[in-house]
Image (cartoon, rainbow, N blue to C red; front, top):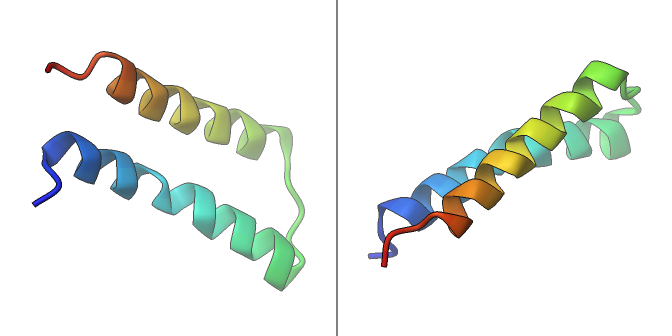
Length: 54
């Protein structure tokens, strides 16, 4: 119903939410590689939204 682009964008945010929940609720620490990975995921989601065919 929402289309493949929106579905992939929503599914790409799952690792971000899992990482944030582990920091806030489980007391895990962020490393630089975690932040770099989150940046890559956000960049990929942004590119999906920017280059979406209309």
